[in-house]
Image (cartoon, one colour):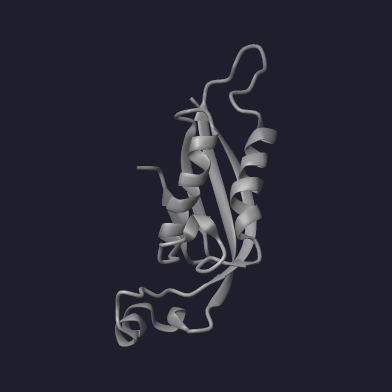
Length: 135
């Protein structure tokens, strides 16, 4: 088994807020990240795919195809946008890094050969990283 990683970056704003909770509960749970005006991050996303190389091509997935999927379905909709208000794949989700990683998985997995997506890693900051390996 071989693993290939592709990294993308995008900038987006968000506000950690659960509309089902009171303003006070949101402030207590999410602290400064519940600022009504939101805040932004430069997200660093790494997608890892796994497979065995085809003897004819020497690769199991063309990186050009992976790049296209990531640009069209992740950075295109998310870059320079509000995760809470403008990014379709985040609608109905609290915009935590955990939910962002799962949403990216859900956008990417169906557009790759079955079973090749191995991991989605989202780095929100130097100190906060989430890894998701699928459902």
